[in-house]
Image 1 (cartoon, rainbow, N blue to C red):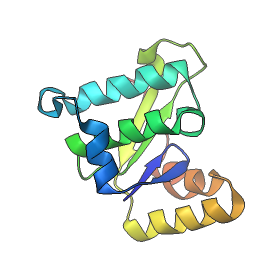
Image 2 (cartoon, rainbow, N blue to C red):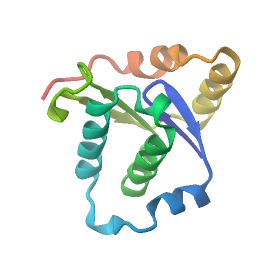
Image 3 (tube, rainbow, N blue to C red):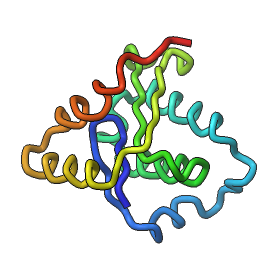
Image 4 (cartoon, rainbow, N blue to C red):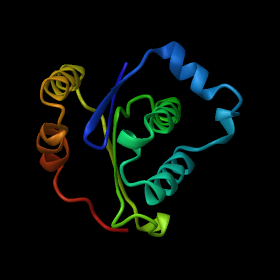
Length: 129
């Protein structure tokens, strides 16, 4: 399974995703609550997906459990330690072949710049709430 978290494609299997959710009553958590959790995590660590990949993977598992069509999310904190409400959130569904291409480029160049250009920049600027 592939998931785009900010500019980094994460790869994990469904068994690992289920393991990440054990101990949580996923039914009681809403999709907006999962996004708020992501805002809180990214307010503390703006590079969560790179510096704490296990936390990011669990967040991705929650997102997919609540919205199976979502396989890409972007959290944009203005700075570390900001108010979680100031973290901009975007999400989308990225075609599997695009995710596979992004993963290939990422593994070859060790960069997520292509993900930003090919996914997030093409969606336009996010609206501020």
